[in-house]
Length: 304
Image (cartoon, rainbow, N blue to C red):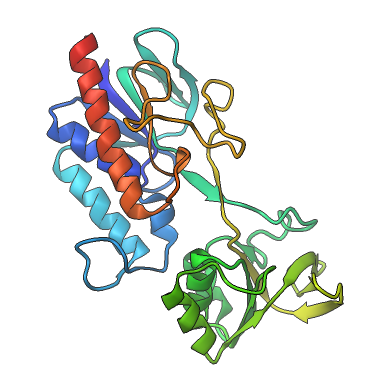
C-alpha cells in the first residue's frame, strides 16, 4: 500500500509529488498522457517567479518533471478508471491493476471548453484545434482564427502569427479580458485583426475547415470568413469525470475544498485547476500542490 497516490501530472500534481517525496512519503503519480498538463501546451510562460526570462511551456513542464523525479517521484503512465473513496484505505483502479493508499491527491486539472458547434468534433484535427502550440506549425502561410478574448486566446494569436499569414481574433465582446501587456502586443501586431462583438455560428467545409459563419451580436449581421484553421480558447472545464458523483462540486463542476485542500472526505485532497478558486495560474497550482501534499502527510501521521 502506498502512502500517497496523486492523480494527474500537471503543475499541481508534480509539485505535490515533490513535497510528498521530500516528506519521506511512499508516493506514486498517475498520468494518462504527458507531464505538465496545460502548461505543456502553453506557448510562452513569463509570469512564474524565478524565471526572469520567458520559457516555453514544454520546457517548463520538462523542468517540473525532472525536478519531481530528482526526489525519486515515481510516474506511471496509466489511466485511472475508478476511485473508491469510502473507508480509511482508498483504492485507485487503473486499466492494469488496483492500487491502495492512505491518502489521495486529486490533480486531474481541466480541459479546454468547446464551442458546441456542429462539425466541431468531426473536424478536430482537420482545421479545429484547442492547442496552438501543438498545431500552429501546420498553418504556415495560411489564414487562421482564434476564438476567445482572454490570456490564452491572445497568447495563441501571437504564437500563430509566427506561422500564419493572417490571424483573426474573434471575440464576442467589445474589449478583451487579457492582461494589458498581451492586449497591447495583439493590437500592435500587423498580422492580427480583432473581430469585436462577434460569435461563430457555424463551421463551413465538407471534409475540413474552409471557413466560418460569423455574426456581429450588436447588429446581427452575418458573414462568411474564409480560413484554414480555427483555434478555440474560450476557457476551461474541470476534468471531474472520476469524482462528479462522489464529491461536492460547484455549479461549474469544480471541486469545493477548504484552504488545506480537503474535499470533505478524510484522506482525500483536491489541488490545481480541478478545484474552485479565484485565480487559475501556474503559481497557484504549485501552491495548491504543496499545501495538499503537506496536508496529506499530516493526515497520515495522525491517522495511521
